Image 1 (tube, rainbow, N blue to C red):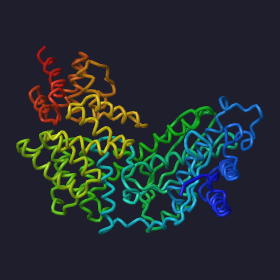
Image 2: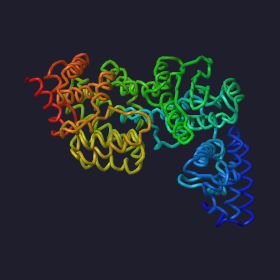
Image 3: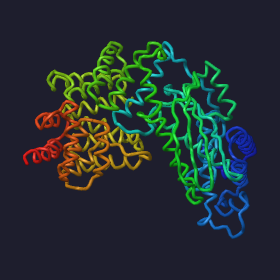
Image 4: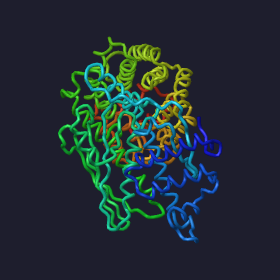
Length: 559
């Protein structure tokens, strides 16, 4: 049941809350500052004593943080910062080692009153992660389906729609961050940064993240083969005045070798400390955990190594992800061949992967068969995958994508918008469905609105592989991020992104940039106006979308 102490003041409930408080302080806040522990004690005690309505910034500042009687919350953000940090610590604890606790504490955003959740039957202790061998390895490559969806949608954010129990991808243990500061009392900065990094990393559903309570755990886990940790992440934090330098280090758990390190710098202003911490932590977590980030690239280099114990399915998912991260012709054949070899297994995720790769073959001219024949085969495979598992993400993507290419707009909308309703805060889902809604179904207003929502939800960096809003800007002669798109197009060599870039540069009469995009297209195998026009015609787009691009390129070629 759920409720606050105002409605659960009987002696039994009070005793449970107090016992849970001590357990949370001792374990959940073990590496937090003393004032974080003091803050939680104060908030919980005030609530169960019936004084929860008095938990305002002034009362907390003067009674917990020893602020003077003239404390002004507008000038001093200590309460907001500390409560925000405590909220994150509690969320992290109850999502990991405290997941089986029978009483859990939450502090909702926008307020300071604690909320209690009571569980009469504590959750069972989770089983240790399965070894990546034999049948157990199937769980690991299933986690790659989450990464695959990310790459298909080409977002770089965390995916919340996958059950945590399905997580069995690369395992990262995050050690407490070490801190070097020019003044005392700054330990909470390192604690807060570590909590933020773990929180954001945990959102990438293809990863499994283990926050370590002590530095000692770091070495101990490395010696335990059953722990099955793939990577250790630690960091050094240097704080001098307002200047903060964060240097994370990613280590191979088996060998101890340094696999990656980077230096991040920012300025911590007292009034904006929480936001600054979140920003730098998000940058670190995105670099490490995103589908085309550090860990993904390391995993891709291991495709042919013995580390996967012959798990063909896992290797095939990685090959598909490698292709979806570049769309390069040379990466397509290995992914397609690998998926075809697994076809007899009948797994819904593998079948969905095959269907999506067939769509890519049809739209990028990577298959010599007639386009209609390829689309028909892709649709049949996608239908079967969706029939087997209509709630799984990859079969859903395959089903609505093939429906769109077959002209089945109502089926596309039904399956695609169901995914949007199920995962309204998932940028990858919003971006993929929105782009197809605009470019393929011709519903520009709805599609571009979904794309805008996806971009607003992204806290890390723009994603140009879905460009419906840019095509919309081209057809309406509206503004677009010209420099960002051009840089992304040349860097990725994605054929369709290069087409959009060339059309945009043509509209703006940026001849050098247009020629650069056309040269990159030629290098990718689409040389000349005729080849580019044929590429546009192969897309599952509306006539208006095709004309918006082809018209610009044709007009420029005619000059």
